[in-house]
Image 1 (cartoon, rainbow, N blue to C red):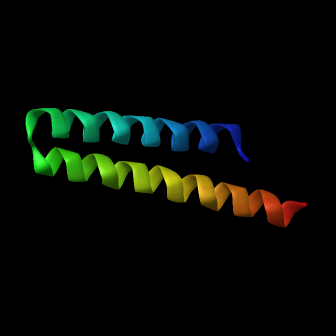
Image 2: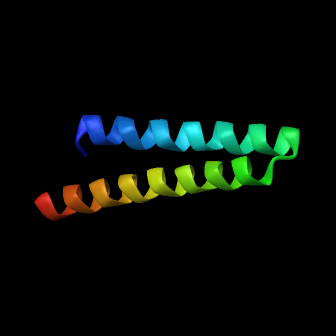
Length: 57
């Protein structure tokens, strides 16, 4: 997996988790949903990179 893309995926996942947690803490459903969306985006990026790596081998 490309180091840059892997780091970007992990950052999106962490940022999304933080945003989701903060949204829940203050009762903001929109922030919670945005956090979940960022986590999904990071998961998708990570999955894409893993597939690319598997195809290279």
